[in-house]
Image (cartoon, rainbow, N blue to C red; front, side, top):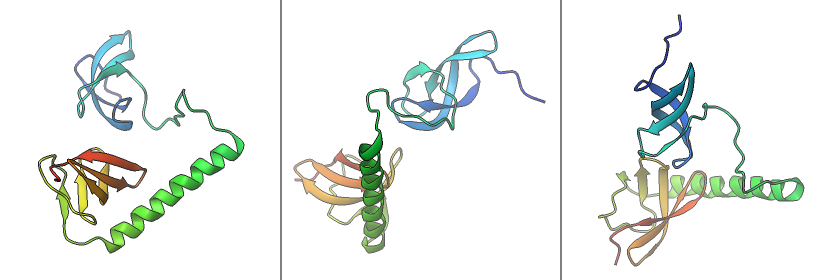
Length: 141
């Protein structure tokens, strides 16, 4: 028996800010259709997008050689990430902007997952995650 959903109930939806399928709170409905939701992780409000649907960015449409190159790049990033995890030293540290990181440290990020510090700069560090590299704020000097 399916539970009838209403405003205030929890539902899984694709978050446009986090770019992940996450838990949301229903904000608005029209009849039985969910219209607006609020992400429980980042707090953004957006239209409801059901989970598990293949998504291609509306600004980036790849075809042919470009698509193969992008797939190859993702595979390369994941291979570097896996090699970094295998060679990384020390325990996984939960990400916090107030911590100074060193090259090779393993970071546990609440949104992006497990990552490895590749390079440090003044108050920043470049971290490679399973899907791509990201520059994160840190207290490095």
